[in-house]
Length: 104
Image 1 (cartoon, helix red, strand yellow):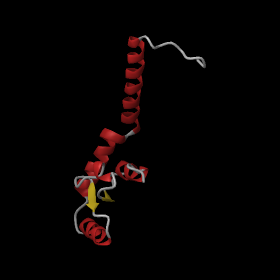
Image 2 (tube, rainbow, N blue to C red):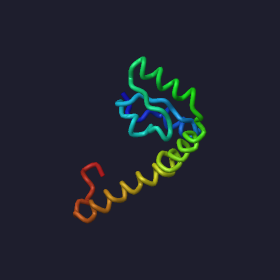
Image 3 (spheres, rainbow, N blue to C red):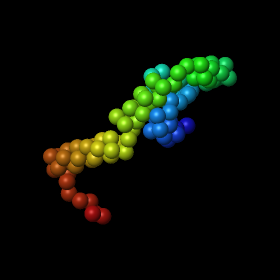
């Protein structure tokens, strides 16, 4: 299983709250502020669908879009990855292991 399916982030990017199964890793991304969590059973899914169908999704939609912009947008992710690369390069330089290997 994929802990963070792309479809969830795509939904957030479009300001769409989602219904997700609890206990599958998605509960780290999907909370009750940006969607609905359901037990991974028929009754749990029915309950989640009912909750989504009978509530106003507008607040969750706004928060889903904000979560995307603040955490998952390409600019944010790329900046975070570049920071990791810089940290690794700097640590390697400080440790004296900055030499290139046989292939480099």
